[in-house]
Every structure is written in C-alpha cells, then in structure tokens.
Image (tube, rainbow, N blue to C red; front, side, top):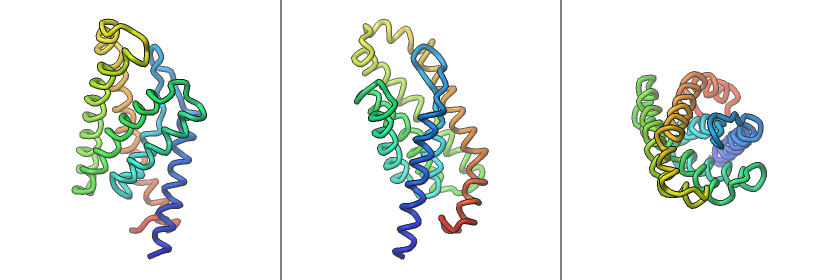
Length: 181
C-alpha cells in the first residue's frame, strides 16, 4: 500500500509540474487582459484519475506557484484561478467518478464546463470591479461581450482537449505502472 501512495504522490506531483509548465509557456492572449492556458486540462486529468480532492489540491498548488512566479494579478488572481480550475476540474471529476464511461466523461466535462462558466461569471461580476479598479457598470458591460465568450472558449477548449487526450494519457500512465488499471 505504501508503494501505491508513493506512486500517487509522484504522479500528482508530475501532473502539477506539467500544469505549471502549461501556465508558464502556454498562455495565449484572447481578449483584453484575458489569457487562455491549458493548465485545467492537466488538473482535470488528475481529478479524473484520482478524484475531485486531487483536482482541488492540484489547483491550489499550481495557482499559488503561478502567483509567486509568473502572475501579476496577486492574491485576487490566485483566488480566481483556484475557483476557475476547481469549478471545472472538481465538478468533472465528481461526476466522472460515478459514471466511468465515454458518455459519462462527456457529461462530466459538460457539467464541469457549465459550472466553471457560471462560477466565473458570478465571480467576475462580484470581484472584478475590486481587483481591476473598474466601476461595476464597466464590468457589467464586459460580462456578455468579453467574460462570457472567454469562459465559453476556455471551457470548450479544456473539455475538448481533455476528452481527446485523457485515454492516451491514462494508458501511458498505466503502462508505466503509475496508476492502477
């Protein structure tokens, strides 16, 4: 059993490192100050393999390291990254845990995407005026024109990429005996 815990810890650490690399080198500017990075793909893969708590742990670790090293948004940005990643990855992992099939994965990723969009729209409405220094009216004007399209794109890319690469990644990790069959 100790060997199994060591393998899990090693695998989760490796996935955290990959998620951080995705942030550090994979940022793509989309609209205004909003940038897409594929870290949530790696975080949700960890959750689909090991469960929602792993997604939560990975999201916190990667977001804190991102805040310390490459982010300029400070604690607000870190909090928003954790909320965004967790709403997608933890929700997807929670639903996938109950239905570990291809159709279950599609439904789980769709639920995660929907949750992420809803959470981030609310969070942007509540907090963006504070951390951006914009009046609430200006943020409200951006909700449907910038934040919603960005979150739809981000959620769609995260879900689509995860769906495409999850099976090959898990198969490779099984061959390396890092995850159980």
